[in-house]
Amino acid sequence: MNIKLISFISVFLLLYGLLNYYIGLRGWQALGNTSILGRFPAWGWVLFFIFLALLFPIGRLSANLLPREIAKIIIYAGSYWMAVLYYLLLAVLMVDIIRLINYWTGIIPKNLYKSPALIGVGVLLLVLLLVLYGTWNANHPVVKNYEVSINKKAGNLDEMRIVVVSDLHLGWIVGIDRMADMVKRINSLQPDLVLIAGDTIDEGIDPSAEQKIPAMIGMLNPRFGTYAVLGNHEYISGNVQTTISNLDKAGIKVLRDQYVKVADNFYVVGRDDRSCKRYTGKERLALSKVMAGIDNKRLPIILLDHEPVDLNIAEEEGVDLQFSGHTHLGQLFPNNFITGLIYEDDWGYHKKANLQVIVSCGFGTWGPPIRIGNCPEILNVLVRFAP
Image (tube, rainbow, N blue to C red; front, side):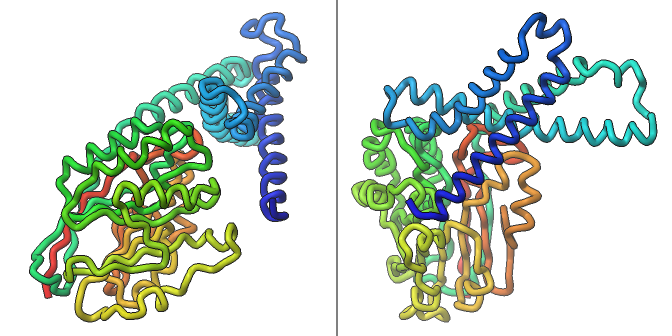
């Protein structure tokens, strides 16, 4: 284990512990001396919060040591607690800001201000409703339709339907049934080409689900084939070669800084994920080297890159259409404001000179099986060729 990873885990656990302490303290201040908790002792409240805080790290660290069903329950509970903790933090911070404003203005009625238990119960109910909605929303994917034109001739093709999916995160939370649903939905769109934009696998995966991947995803059968790239989570999990092997058994070509010329009609270029250096010590190839040998003036060029970065380079190299994922559009509102600051295009369609980019917010979830402020999606893209 390298020093950077140890440092990251240490900082994460420190911040995570402090957040749990803060929420636990504010919860006791609101509810501890009320009839809601009755004679519940302070030490019991502390133990309860320690238990909640430990669910996530214990679940992740002991997933392969415990019996499968027990591990799954702990991982689910810990993942949900992460979402609850996040929204409790936002709610408590908002309450504290309002209290500070009230200290200077006195705008809040005293009977409400003097009832912290009422505020605490209200916050808990609000967070519960958000989590319930987010769970429902995460399990109701949509098809996002796009139509784009590329100003090149593509052999004898006038148009082509491309279906793109990213960020399934198949693992302990997202099960093989989710992949089955994804495959069924993709096939119903009758695509000519299917592209998988990375993070097919999560950090940890149920071994029984992993064995079913080739047969399940092998049911995809578009006429021009299925191509995939790796995402950062394949590297985090250490399952790069296993993922490639499973996809290869299903007839899916994983492109790692490679390109293919498809039916003499167009090119598909696949980039290795830029996180590869962190885990292998090797930089991914420059796009100019990946595309060496491609005549960027003649046939359409479709680029698959898990993370929507280096758009200016893609445009300079003559890429016509790029597909990416990774961002999840923040997954939990208001994280979308952060992804919007990080990426030039964090979701949807973006045009940059002659380059067109479409970023998917993904089909699965990472961490909590919850989506708020966005919907899981499959991209259904009708591409027209007009020289």
